[in-house]
Amino acid sequence: MDLEIEGNAALVTASSSGLGKASAIALARDGANVVVNGRDEDRLADAVEEVEGEATGEVVGVEGDLTDSDDTERLVERTVEEFGGLDHLVTSAGGPPSGPFLETNDEDWYDAYDLLVMSVVRLVREATPHLRDGDGGTVVTITSRSVKESIDALVLSNSVRMSVIGLEKTLSKELAPEVRANAVLPGAHETARIRELVEQGVERGDYESYEAGVSERGQANPLGRIGDPMELGNTAAFLSSPKSGYINGESVVVDGGQSAGNL
Image 1 (tube, rainbow, N blue to C red):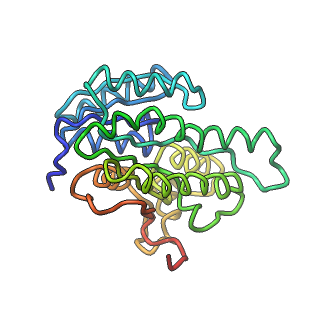
Image 2 (image 1 turned 120 degrees about the vertical axis):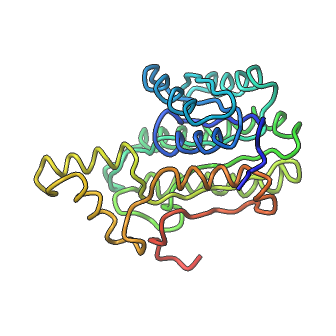
Image 3 (image 1 turned 180 degrees about the vertical axis):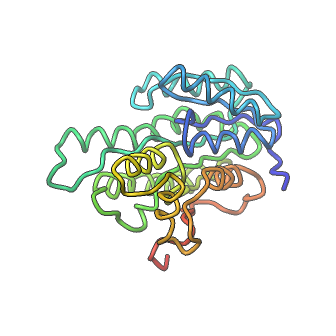
């Protein structure tokens, strides 16, 4: 399917690895010019090289910390400088620390809010004038299926990410019709974090091999496996394209059907 985004400009945050990188690859494959973002210089350089290997447009790496307001402003500015505008914003960020409620303190809560919510607030605020200038701007926020169904020992993610969904729904009305806003709610995908956890399990003797660990983690899923990051990335790219032009204000769960909720 041609997503009709060739030559468009896209900014994907936290895209030096994981689901952000998969989203950057998916957009780049379809011809969008993409800014890839990360905090680690070496990891960012590797990610840019990987995305460039799939791209038909331009790929630029820009370092930046999403909890730094100056950095988020600079990310948008560099995208516009490099590509002459901004058509698509995909926001991704690392997850907050795990742990139960009574083991989290005030600093944990404020840090999680700054990382997950205020980063999106600042990015969208800076990006909106540019998104409105194009022929169909989009915002896609990558959150977690935890906003639909709470996950044990993830109180920060369960609670704080809900604010992103409230923001996304509000944006879908306030920025329309020039800009559409949607959210993607991923379940378990084979990212670096999952690989790390499985490898630790192999070292402890929980699994016979990495492949066995990944297989076991996917057994509870109706599809019998965990997700490929590109499956999430392809969804983010679709929601950024004219092909999804009548989808606005939605939260799309990408978890293989593992969530128990009806809605």
